[in-house]
Image 1 (cartoon, helix red, strand yellow):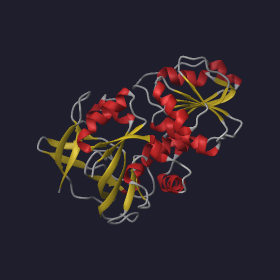
Image 2: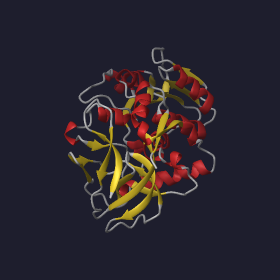
Image 3: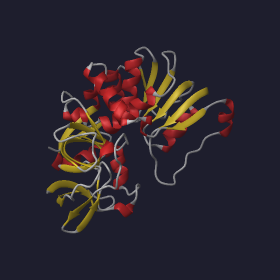
Length: 333
């Protein structure tokens, strides 16, 4: 069986659309017809070679919606024809070696949930069955943007008296803002981004009552969430806290790059922590956020700026790179 796929063959070069041969399913693997896949800033980091040049050529994509075509030996979590969300975040089920696809030029590597392909082989523990009433383009952003951004909020001690600031209004930051506003409509929440259109979007679509440019003076916050992947934003997130505040770092900077903080601020009571995937477990958290979406308590469609046909994958990545998207989605099948 063959599949069209977008392959990263060279660092800092566009992805190449080509036809690959699918390997035979192994134990614990699931073959999925991919419907839609989210575009994440992590893919831009992969293109720059930040996640390991030794894996190139390889497939990208790590959140998607799809339909199960076939399951490998030992798979019990899903079956043929199930409608699923796919995530890079681990859940229940088997977790085995990622697949290796084949092209006329040789092997093409892939992670356990690489989804920039018409048909993708993923591990059982990266899929969750979801209701068919969730649109494929909405389901495609559940596996990273929604889980990470909203998971951060649901694992913190926040009340309606908290003073909160979010740096970086992309898929993750916007998801954090959406969850805050859904829980505490009257909370004092500040959105920070260098792009004016994103600040205006946060006000109009999410009801955020205050927005700021990163260059402005900021102080006195109980909670700062950094989602921009900017060194200066990470430092400012810590600096802007009150003496009992917590900074949560969710963004990624380059390999080996470091941030600077004043150690005495730690002695006074400030805290800085990291968040890996929002602390989520997909088998619990994806159904939870789906239930809120279907109950019209989370307007997830607002997070999606544009939907691209699969052959426009590089255009979507260019738009993401330029700051033109909150979240972009590829319509693959």
